[in-house]
Image (cartoon, rainbow, N blue to C red; front, side, top):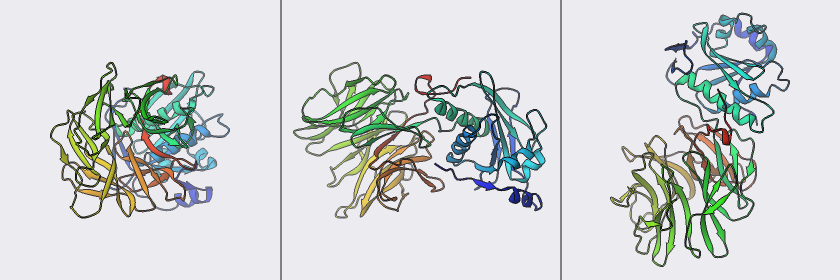
Amino acid sequence: MRFRAARFTRVQALFALSVAFLAPLSLRAQDTTNTGVRLGLNYGAGTKPGVIVLPVIDDDSDSLRVIVQRDLDFSDRMNVIDLDYSTVSSLVPAAGEKINFGLVAKFGAALLVRMTPTSQGLHVAAYDVARGQLLQSEHFLFDRRDRDWRFALHGISDQIEQWTFGKRGIAQTRVAYVSNGELKIIDSDGAETRAITTGKGALSPAWSPGGESVVFTVLGNSGTQVEELDVRTGRTRRISQIRVGLNITPVYQPGGNAILYAQGTGNGTDLVLSELDSSAPRRITIGRGTDNTSPSYSPDGTKIAFISGKSGSPQVYIMDADGSNVQLLTPYTPGVRSYRASPDWSPDGRAVAYEQQNGNFQIWTIDLRDRAPKQLTSEGENEDPSWAPDGRHLVFTSSRGGDKQLWILDTETGRARQLTHAKGARLAAWSPILANPEVGTYSQ
């Protein structure tokens, strides 16, 4: 997978030195003496700070540098300036020698990142180019022999963003999805795909708040059941108690102590809440012959977005977590054909993403303050949106490339990138940040 970046050849680099550049963007450090302090970026509205990541010593394939560059590029908050090796060598001739910050600034960089392998890991330093000084540095325990070394490196990329913007990145996350009936997970950069179930019939995965487990639906001969899978051990357990019938679209309560899902009855489909330490689920909605499915909690757990057909066609509703105060969220005009489904409440609580059919399915969001809907996609069919932890990116199923694949959209710029490359990927769920040794992380 290639990342998008500004690439300079040696000739272009020499030309760049002969022309006038705009004044480099400035990084303002509130405190550069303590590790982990919040740093602010000064840059013009509508622009992104440039970053140069130096080659890594003794990394023949330069994979460490390439992965970090890709992570920073995929964040959509930085402009990665990808210089060729000879040009970079002129900026920093050798380890321990003085960085030519003036020359670095002429390439439009505000941030310079250097990674140095050590006997116990990787030392990472980030430099404020405009000020010509160290912003932050830290030593990470890191071993390329570890199975999850790539995922640990994503955590380092995220820490660089924390130093730079005061907000951690989302590279150290995974996306669960369904392909040919199997439940799979993939890193946020599109690498390291693996199946986490062995049987067929998996549907509708959702991550636990800590990312240690996934709840999903299994389609069998007697209907559908809700199961929970421990991602670390591979062990599963059944959540739904009715062994024959419909049990679908499960999600965790934000506290992680209960699972909310839709259960079919003889009088429609209702949302039921199953405490993980209790065997008796509690009904939340009263459908009276209609179907209520696809719940999504607000971040604070006080409200639920869901799908109901009570108006005559599926629409997005919201209600209090106990089932009271039900309100229609998406605008609906009686007699006008519309279909809305798959709501997902944003992590910042400000919007709900959903799919809408007026011809082809497309991804929309609706602002919770002014109730204004906004269409995000138009190319091909696009379904089943799921928010990233940053509340900025969405993963969804799209046919824009021919086959149905997972794509990621930056809702601020409209930039889209393909995540999967295996036919039939669908029903994606973006994990929380997985800063946990059991699922792959970095150590300080």
